[in-house]
Image (cartoon, rainbow, N blue to C red):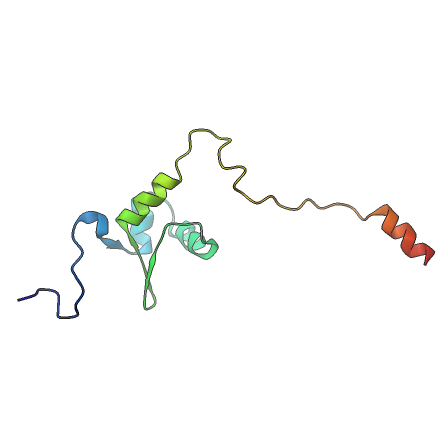
Length: 101
């Protein structure tokens, strides 16, 4: 007899496959639940699962994400981030040509 309630899903084995709530995942990572929510919105946080309206994280995905975040230098990753456009003052040539028209 199967112990999986007859839905065809295999029970998850091992603690790495355990699903955590965002609050539990934040505690596991020693981060805030707000950080995880922002990571979901930006798309740069750990992988998660959406079960109806519930968000769940697997411990194995959290560990993979932690490993991917590992750095050996403070200068690592600066090329990966998009640069913010610098605000530049109005173009003087554009102003003078607009006045002439």
